[in-house]
Length: 260
Image (tube, rainbow, N blue to C red):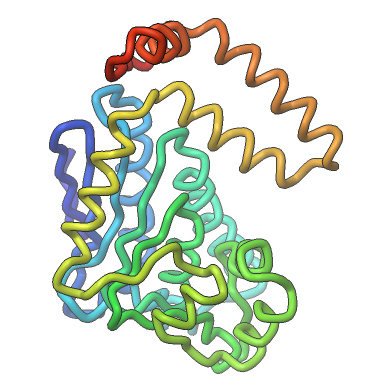
């Protein structure tokens, strides 16, 4: 599947998607968003891929935001359509059913921060800066940022980031829970691959059920979410992976999960 704005590599159960527009700090224009959509759907169908890493080309930027030239000509109708299109792509990332790791190698601003938040896990280079600067353009986030950010860092801190438009450094992002871990920039992709490799050895079915339980459960009342968890637990109990995992534990060996 050819791409103009992305690189897609697969290796040992791990796929790496690289936003490849370094000349514009990997800004997300509509063609790039559409390519990301196609890549995610392709990875969803590929059972050999168990974990996905998303990063940006170069060492300056993960994704520096949307294409301002596209934003400048939006009308109320096209603006809503633009936001919905981006939300659709990021929802696909969030609900891929496989862990997606954001390897944040520089600026993650606007749509870049929103893309990172749609990922299950976020590793940041110590040089990374994250934020939602849309207010400086007289706008608000359109790709889910106003909803995912408070779910990650809480209402008060989210509003501070959204209303001031100020970017924060990697250490502060880790402190408030916006990223999982900060690593030296030179070690970012090594650490991301190590984490992805560890996840790729886990049960694909269990990972899918965990991601589903968390993503969907957060939108439910607590009791309803727990009941949903119990349903998924029952489904997991019927899988070959569960039988392999329990048998391997009792036999004191490492499990060999197949995703069935």
